[in-house]
Image 1 (tube, protein in one colour):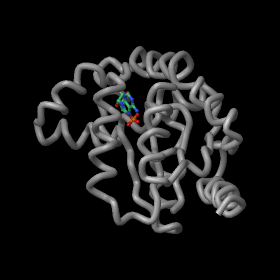
Image 2 (cartoon, rainbow, N blue to C red):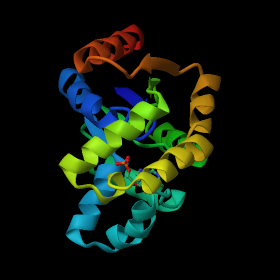
Image 3 (spheres, rainbow, N blue to C red):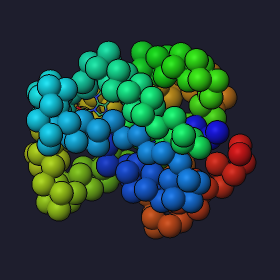
Length: 191
Ligand code: AMP
């Protein structure tokens, strides 16, 4: 079992790199943002609840996120491991994830943080908004709010994993494949 948290601000490349990593290591991808967007497109109650937070670039309440992740884990028990992308985003989520994984006897092996300067993030998110049509990527205010939320609420999660000696930083600027190779190198050193 190989459980990895892929960490980083919005626009750091977590989705792109997760897609490559799940193929190479045969892992299950848990992107909480993607799961919320799926609920939204299906018009579920969970989707409606999440929408108000997502529209403003705020975090969906911890309890809702954790419940959704637990459901996903229960539905994918045959997986060889998971890549958590965009989760945990608060220390409470990280603690809850540890409890959930402890029950399954499959702890987090590694947290990899993709580091990208703020100015580059803004450029990337606006570009992505043009292509994907994601409403939270269209508008500079919403983007700024997401970066602010990341700094205030999500960055402390890095310290949580540093204390467990599971944290590594990876430069998220440059060639996608070069960044991918660096991520693989970090995984191979714990796997
Ligand atoms: P993402 O696709 O990861 O950028 O997530 C899009 C939006 O979904 C975020 O701005 C939040 O509103 C919500 N979201 C995704 N993951 C989480 C999470 N772990 N905790 C709280 N809200 C989340």
